[in-house]
Length: 214
Image 1 (cartoon, helix red, strand yellow):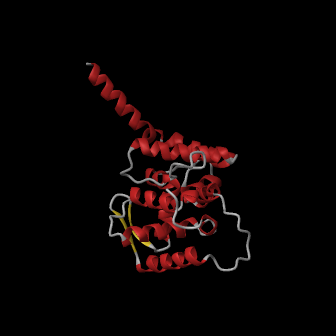
Image 2: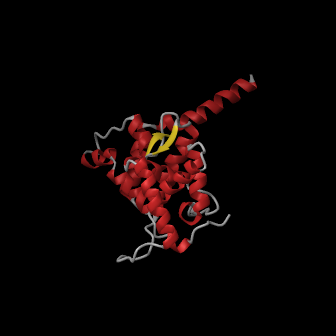
Image 3: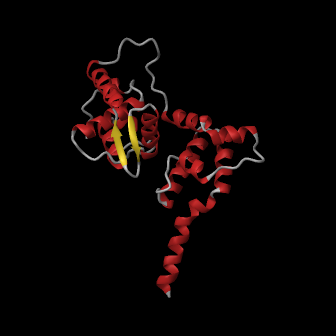
Protein backbone atom coordinates (compact mmCIF):
# COMPACT_ATOMS: atom_id res chain seq x y z
CA UNK A 1 0.00 0.00 0.00
CA UNK A 2 1.43 3.36 -1.03
CA UNK A 3 1.87 6.05 1.62
CA UNK A 4 -0.34 9.14 1.23
CA UNK A 5 2.72 11.29 1.99
CA UNK A 6 5.82 12.15 0.01
CA UNK A 7 8.70 9.91 1.03
CA UNK A 8 11.25 12.67 0.42
CA UNK A 9 9.40 14.79 3.01
CA UNK A 10 8.62 12.26 5.73
CA UNK A 11 12.18 10.93 5.60
CA UNK A 12 13.30 14.21 7.16
CA UNK A 13 10.80 14.07 10.05
CA UNK A 14 11.85 12.37 13.29
CA UNK A 15 10.47 8.90 14.00
CA UNK A 16 8.96 10.11 17.28
CA UNK A 17 6.99 12.85 15.52
CA UNK A 18 5.83 10.44 12.83
CA UNK A 19 4.65 8.10 15.58
CA UNK A 20 2.57 10.74 17.36
CA UNK A 21 1.05 11.70 14.03
CA UNK A 22 0.09 8.05 13.40
CA UNK A 23 -1.44 7.87 16.87
CA UNK A 24 -3.43 11.04 16.22
CA UNK A 25 -4.90 9.47 13.05
CA UNK A 26 -6.09 6.48 15.09
CA UNK A 27 -7.95 8.82 17.45
CA UNK A 28 -9.38 10.80 14.55
CA UNK A 29 -10.90 7.55 13.31
CA UNK A 30 -12.25 6.93 16.85
CA UNK A 31 -10.45 3.59 17.08
CA UNK A 32 -8.91 1.89 20.08
CA UNK A 33 -5.25 2.86 20.30
CA UNK A 34 -3.65 -0.50 21.11
CA UNK A 35 0.04 -1.14 20.51
CA UNK A 36 -0.61 -3.40 17.51
CA UNK A 37 -2.83 -0.72 15.98
CA UNK A 38 -0.05 1.87 16.31
CA UNK A 39 2.40 -0.50 14.61
CA UNK A 40 0.00 -0.95 11.71
CA UNK A 41 -0.71 2.78 11.32
CA UNK A 42 2.96 3.79 11.46
CA UNK A 43 3.86 1.23 8.81
CA UNK A 44 0.92 2.08 6.52
CA UNK A 45 1.61 5.81 6.64
CA UNK A 46 5.42 5.70 6.58
CA UNK A 47 6.60 2.30 5.30
CA UNK A 48 10.12 3.44 4.41
CA UNK A 49 10.76 4.61 7.97
CA UNK A 50 9.09 1.84 9.94
CA UNK A 51 9.91 -1.28 7.92
CA UNK A 52 12.50 -3.82 9.04
CA UNK A 53 15.90 -3.23 7.46
CA UNK A 54 16.28 -6.78 6.17
CA UNK A 55 12.59 -7.32 5.50
CA UNK A 56 11.15 -3.91 4.51
CA UNK A 57 7.77 -5.46 3.75
CA UNK A 58 7.27 -6.06 7.50
CA UNK A 59 6.91 -3.41 10.24
CA UNK A 60 9.64 -2.98 12.85
CA UNK A 61 7.55 -3.49 15.99
CA UNK A 62 10.47 -3.14 18.42
CA UNK A 63 11.46 0.20 16.89
CA UNK A 64 7.89 1.48 17.14
CA UNK A 65 7.69 0.44 20.81
CA UNK A 66 10.66 2.64 21.56
CA UNK A 67 9.08 5.58 19.75
CA UNK A 68 5.79 5.16 21.65
CA UNK A 69 7.76 5.32 24.90
CA UNK A 70 9.49 8.46 23.64
CA UNK A 71 6.08 9.99 22.91
CA UNK A 72 5.03 9.13 26.45
CA UNK A 73 8.24 10.60 27.90
CA UNK A 74 7.53 13.80 25.94
CA UNK A 75 4.05 14.03 27.43
CA UNK A 76 2.36 13.41 24.08
CA UNK A 77 0.56 10.22 25.13
CA UNK A 78 -0.39 8.41 28.32
CA UNK A 79 -1.10 4.74 29.02
CA UNK A 80 0.73 1.49 28.37
CA UNK A 81 0.76 -1.58 26.15
CA UNK A 82 -1.73 -3.47 28.32
CA UNK A 83 -4.35 -0.75 28.70
CA UNK A 84 -3.77 1.08 25.44
CA UNK A 85 -2.68 4.66 24.82
CA UNK A 86 -4.39 8.06 25.00
CA UNK A 87 -3.16 11.15 23.17
CA UNK A 88 -2.75 14.33 25.23
CA UNK A 89 -3.59 17.88 24.21
CA UNK A 90 0.13 18.50 23.74
CA UNK A 91 0.33 15.43 21.53
CA UNK A 92 -2.53 16.75 19.39
CA UNK A 93 -0.72 20.07 18.90
CA UNK A 94 2.49 18.31 17.91
CA UNK A 95 0.58 16.07 15.48
CA UNK A 96 -0.97 19.15 13.87
CA UNK A 97 2.51 20.61 13.39
CA UNK A 98 3.70 17.34 11.85
CA UNK A 99 0.74 17.34 9.43
CA UNK A 100 1.65 20.85 8.30
CA UNK A 101 5.23 19.75 7.75
CA UNK A 102 4.14 16.68 5.80
CA UNK A 103 1.87 18.75 3.58
CA UNK A 104 4.10 21.77 3.03
CA UNK A 105 7.53 20.26 3.53
CA UNK A 106 10.01 21.08 6.31
CA UNK A 107 11.33 24.58 6.81
CA UNK A 108 14.57 25.44 5.09
CA UNK A 109 17.15 23.18 6.74
CA UNK A 110 20.64 24.02 7.86
CA UNK A 111 21.62 20.38 8.39
CA UNK A 112 22.18 17.40 6.08
CA UNK A 113 19.04 15.69 4.80
CA UNK A 114 20.41 12.21 5.43
CA UNK A 115 18.14 10.36 7.83
CA UNK A 116 19.64 9.17 11.08
CA UNK A 117 19.81 5.41 11.11
CA UNK A 118 17.27 3.78 13.38
CA UNK A 119 19.94 1.46 14.73
CA UNK A 120 21.87 4.44 16.12
CA UNK A 121 18.77 5.50 18.02
CA UNK A 122 18.30 2.08 19.60
CA UNK A 123 21.95 1.82 20.64
CA UNK A 124 21.81 5.33 22.07
CA UNK A 125 18.76 4.25 24.09
CA UNK A 126 20.80 1.41 25.62
CA UNK A 127 23.76 3.64 26.45
CA UNK A 128 21.56 6.17 28.25
CA UNK A 129 19.80 3.51 30.33
CA UNK A 130 20.50 3.31 34.07
CA UNK A 131 21.46 -0.41 33.97
CA UNK A 132 24.12 0.25 31.34
CA UNK A 133 25.54 3.17 33.33
CA UNK A 134 25.86 0.92 36.41
CA UNK A 135 27.42 -1.79 34.27
CA UNK A 136 30.07 0.62 33.02
CA UNK A 137 30.86 1.77 36.57
CA UNK A 138 31.23 -1.74 38.01
CA UNK A 139 30.97 -4.71 35.66
CA UNK A 140 31.88 -7.28 38.31
CA UNK A 141 29.09 -6.40 40.74
CA UNK A 142 26.51 -5.42 38.14
CA UNK A 143 22.96 -6.63 38.82
CA UNK A 144 19.82 -5.91 36.82
CA UNK A 145 16.28 -6.31 38.15
CA UNK A 146 13.50 -7.99 36.21
CA UNK A 147 11.68 -4.67 35.84
CA UNK A 148 14.81 -3.00 34.45
CA UNK A 149 15.46 -5.90 32.10
CA UNK A 150 11.95 -5.79 30.67
CA UNK A 151 12.02 -2.02 30.29
CA UNK A 152 15.42 -2.20 28.60
CA UNK A 153 14.05 -4.35 25.78
CA UNK A 154 10.76 -2.45 25.54
CA UNK A 155 8.61 -5.06 27.30
CA UNK A 156 6.23 -5.19 30.25
CA UNK A 157 5.42 -7.80 32.90
CA UNK A 158 2.52 -8.87 30.66
CA UNK A 159 4.77 -9.52 27.65
CA UNK A 160 4.76 -13.27 26.80
CA UNK A 161 8.11 -15.13 27.14
CA UNK A 162 8.26 -15.76 23.40
CA UNK A 163 7.91 -12.06 22.57
CA UNK A 164 10.36 -11.18 25.35
CA UNK A 165 12.96 -13.46 23.78
CA UNK A 166 12.29 -12.08 20.29
CA UNK A 167 12.78 -8.51 21.53
CA UNK A 168 15.99 -9.45 23.32
CA UNK A 169 17.43 -11.28 20.30
CA UNK A 170 16.58 -8.30 18.11
CA UNK A 171 18.60 -6.05 20.42
CA UNK A 172 21.54 -8.47 20.49
CA UNK A 173 21.57 -8.82 16.70
CA UNK A 174 21.48 -5.06 16.30
CA UNK A 175 24.53 -4.58 18.55
CA UNK A 176 26.39 -7.24 16.61
CA UNK A 177 25.49 -5.68 13.26
CA UNK A 178 26.93 -2.38 14.44
CA UNK A 179 30.02 -4.03 15.89
CA UNK A 180 29.41 -2.60 19.37
CA UNK A 181 31.23 -5.19 21.49
CA UNK A 182 30.69 -3.34 24.77
CA UNK A 183 26.91 -3.24 24.39
CA UNK A 184 26.94 -6.86 23.22
CA UNK A 185 28.81 -7.89 26.37
CA UNK A 186 26.37 -5.85 28.47
CA UNK A 187 23.37 -7.64 26.94
CA UNK A 188 25.02 -11.03 27.43
CA UNK A 189 25.52 -10.15 31.10
CA UNK A 190 21.81 -9.32 31.28
CA UNK A 191 21.00 -12.63 29.57
CA UNK A 192 23.03 -14.58 32.16
CA UNK A 193 21.08 -13.03 35.02
CA UNK A 194 17.62 -13.24 33.44
CA UNK A 195 17.92 -16.39 31.32
CA UNK A 196 14.93 -17.93 33.12
CA UNK A 197 12.66 -15.24 31.67
CA UNK A 198 13.81 -16.03 28.14
CA UNK A 199 13.63 -19.81 28.52
CA UNK A 200 10.31 -20.08 30.31
CA UNK A 201 8.38 -20.17 27.06
CA UNK A 202 10.47 -23.12 25.82
CA UNK A 203 10.08 -24.98 29.11
CA UNK A 204 6.32 -24.68 29.00
CA UNK A 205 6.22 -26.16 25.52
CA UNK A 206 8.33 -29.12 26.62
CA UNK A 207 6.06 -29.76 29.60
CA UNK A 208 2.99 -29.76 27.35
CA UNK A 209 4.63 -32.19 24.97
CA UNK A 210 5.53 -34.58 27.78
CA UNK A 211 2.01 -34.51 29.09
CA UNK A 212 0.66 -35.17 25.61
CA UNK A 213 2.88 -38.23 25.26
CA UNK A 214 1.67 -39.64 28.57
